[in-house]
Image 1 (cartoon, rainbow, N blue to C red):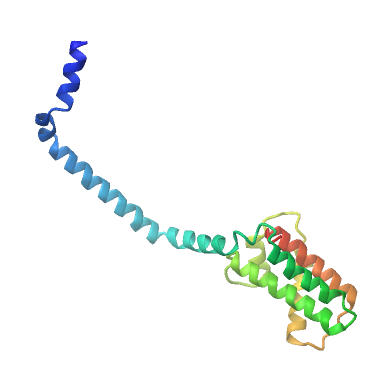
Image 2 (cartoon, rainbow, N blue to C red):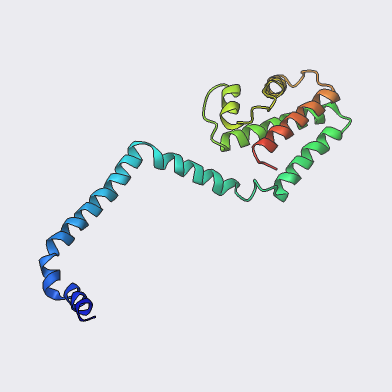
Length: 173
């Protein structure tokens, strides 16, 4: 026991600490060097930029992406427009659903490019029916470009069903 206590006394002695001061200084410099290296390579590799974009996205939508009352209410208003007998309200329902999908797609960080490329970056489900979504997007685009474009109630219902499935894939509901 005496040998162990002498060892611990030697470890905490001021003489040993003064002899190892240069080693502590080297470790401090290495620590600072590695911390700066982390930030330098993180910034150079755009790691922090992408992380910041993800944090902003999840801060804005973290509460909303858990089937929040606001999203349900917003979608209920769109469905209410669809149930109307007026053709203009049905067109407005499809236009608002398309705008909502575009907003969520953009907030999800889909980037730039054509619609199909942006959707395939975000929705990774292999069994998702991209053809229906692309067709619905073309219908939405034609309604936005030409408000006089003909639209039946069945087309509007199908378009809203496709947008609803796509929003579910994006965890909007």
